[in-house]
Image (cartoon, rainbow, N blue to C red; front, side, top):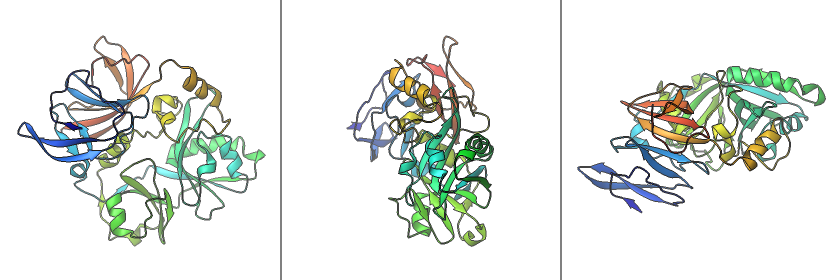
Length: 355
């Protein structure tokens, strides 16, 4: 299917399309088409500003395109003009060692620990008794393969340690905050150029002087580096909007120190990813999360909205009647446009709103 008319109707809807080819807009015509797959994704416009949404599986499964109110199309390769390592200085590790580590984590986190291996990492979260997300993180085996790394925001990892320490006496495991690594985001192309041994079929991989972790269909991978002196030949960039845009496009939100305990997994879209496994069994808050998932008539949903105006994270989304219908989770800036990830409440029914 070729989208050839930039004048979308207000409630233009695309659902269950396996592939769309969209061309760059120039002189009222389209040329140089690029293709990307969608899974149960809806695209509709609000006041001429296009929004990507899905209450089923909202992920765009490649990293190529989004829309603005002028229907100018940004290709991802245009967005990453300056490739290089992005310093993710806010990340740290909570490390668990000991043969009881698996059982402790399996009983407390939302993800299935059976899927974590020497070549596969997962994403997970911990909820409180009310089913609200206390922390979120990447999960991998540690480098000795006798324990696990939880990788997330520094303060969130401290909170996570405090939560898990309540159960630590019942398991043969030790918990410690590991500050031996610095974290950087690296693009797929830079990985290919500088780490030729990369196996992109693995979401966790050890190299000679560092290690890599990856989730979802993100353009950027995370490198854990103990000594950055060995990587002087690599280019570095301070443009964190590249990382944030990649997070937004893949609708991936990691809880931080300001949002711990504020959202349910469904409000963050966690139920649409491996971050929440509905078949693994019990964990703290599991009954409430499952009840919402299976019994709620309408679930919250995530939206991606690009506009000239920008709204700060945790700002309310207000409709034209002054009603709160959501929260801003993330914002990434590109030129004079802003890309937002929004968590829309059950009150949202497709009505108009501005940011």
